[in-house]
Length: 614
Image 1 (tube, rainbow, N blue to C red):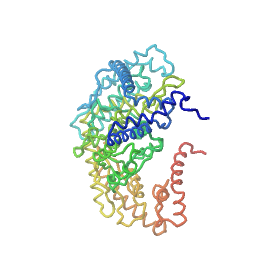
Image 2 (image 1 turned 90 degrees about the horizontal axis):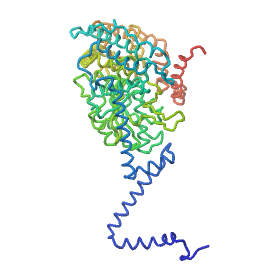
Image 3 (image 1 turned 90 degrees about the vertical axis):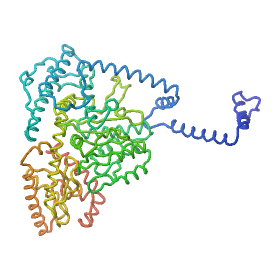
Image 4 (image 1 turned 30 degrees about the vertical axis):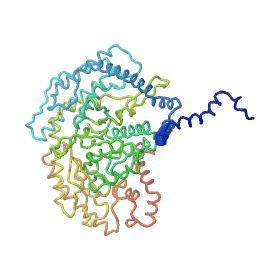
């Protein structure tokens, strides 16, 4: 039934009057003004549609909260309240840290002596033991040693280290190693039960993290007031935390669903980025590189354009793991900045080397567009395995570290949160990294870098002494030399890996890289041996002769190179089947099932180690 207009409720009468009211108002404006107002309204409605759309994992309550924060008055009040909480927490942390003395935000020029560092550890230990003595906690401390046995080895503490700048490299590196070994042993003895996630009892943990992150950031031009970050268990965790953080940024700020975010890197990027993509449901697109391993910038630009706002980060290597060359970080940062995404600089392998070579400008954290950087303290930083550092900067208006933090306020066990995946966090890696940085000093790191790079260049010269047999992939830029069997020599595919096997028999273990390439990563231990270059050259000479002999024997028998776990050919054929190298049946099998077969073969390798008896 239809009601006459006069009997309709007043609200409906008002609705029917709206068109007449709009027409009368529009008559007051010019056509151009009406067009402009309409355009603005359409843009506003379009924007509102994006805001109202529910994002992945978002509850109705969270959706309403996000919409409410688009209202300036509410947003201003909310941000003011959160800032007030932040200030309160910061004051609390500073008060907890006061007892630990002055903080380091730069590596000292000269390494601090052994006794002073041991005294520092003893001081930290006494502060913690005093606060916990006779205090019984729920869980947290499961060994009585932490609160009942605090005696220290006074003989160890009173010993002087014998570092002398006038020592030759080998003697200097040995003395530095013995000094750090002594410090680490004592540090572990005192701190092995400290858990930095129990910040009331072990606030030393976050205090150490703060200092280590900023000392590493300072190496790369970072401002201590602009950076944040974490000490992790190694380069892999640093890279994976970065990937997950960028994914979360995409979810929160670009409305991505899991699997929508894209990270772009060169094919020379470390596998941990790919692993992070698998773990965090981020698509990792790999751009081509030149043979030396540097990313193709033109293809990078094309991939960024292709994926648009789905790109959450670009990854640059400085240097790359496979061949040890530097990506054009500044140019890549410009691309990231123009696209509004992040740029991570992976310095895990050579951080303490490239940073101390005059040929490289490594003030990466000063470059606009760079939003994070990773560096391994357990490699040339000389800290024990495993420790690494992830340094983070702002992306949009928030530091990237924000997106790593887990926050679960409604858990039945209480309000819960952790900065990374770990639910307990040993202070040992942070403490030992801290002591390594202080004990080595800029002078020590500079000396190591010079010796390592010089040795890498000498190895490259040795490779070049075998023209027609070996071919250098790129002149060393840091601590890695990459080379292969020269194709013009006429040996079968896989000869480079057979050569590596021969080198291992002569006590030089090379890393097998894709595309018939091997590399050797030079360490201070290697560089400090005065006989090492002669020994390496002799091993190369003998290994080339042995490889040629094996190649000729296989040809006579109509066979090819093969190796354990497919090091030479088997897995390679499955990953990239070559019709010329395989029968049609095997080629078809590898084409259809090869990648799965390669994946399962790798898994079988590790399953065998988990249980070798079944």
